[in-house]
Structures are given as structure tokens and as C-alpha cells.
Figure 1 (tube, helix red, strand yellow):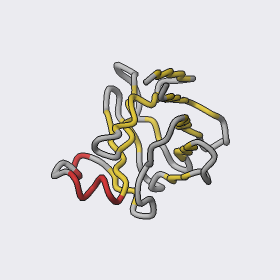
Figure 2 (cartoon, one colour):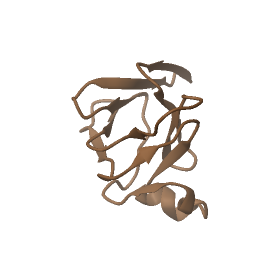
Figure 3 (spheres, rainbow, N blue to C red):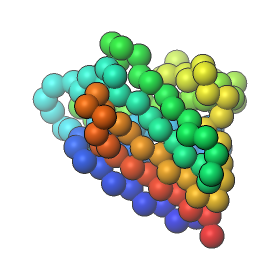
Figure 4 (cartoon, rainbow, N blue to C red):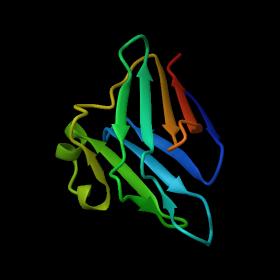
Length: 120
């Protein structure tokens, strides 16, 4: 599998964990203020399937060097570490395919990070 990551700012898409059905974000800042994720969203496109969209809770923020794992409904049933992350109740699975693009969109509808995965 080929993986490409792009980040425009301190919040990056660290990985899409296919085994645990989760998406992992990290705040790359070493110090400073928390980054509010109010009105931010994750958009995931698998092959030609309809886009999967997750909207962050309105009061959610990431502290410097903090990581968060967003589990799908299926992923939350596979692990006992859900208390360390968020559960996307409306997303059955983050899904898998040949060509997968996951994007982080901020509150101004700007793309802040992209993670592309391609099975060859």
C-alpha cells in the first residue's frame, strides 16, 4: 500500500487504522493554545462510493502534542480503548478500497490535511 500525507497547519491526519476501523489526528504543536475543532469535519472517499463525513463535537479541541482516535461504530466494538477517543456513531465503518482519500476540513471549509492510501 502506498500512503501519502499532506498537512497545512498543526493538525494532521496521522493514520487511518484499517484494523481498528479508526482515523487518528494529532496536533503537531509543541506548545501554545489548544486548537478548536468546532465545525471541523473528516471526509473520506473510497473508490467511487459516496463520501463518508464525520463532524466534530462543537466543543472539541486538541491540546499541543495531543492525539485523538475517531472510531467508527464497528471500530468502537473492536477495542476497549474507546475512552481515549471519539466514536462516530453515524458511521458504520471507515471502509476500505483500492483508492482511499481522507481529508480534514476546517471551519472555513479549507482543506487542512489529506491522507491518501492506494493498494497496488
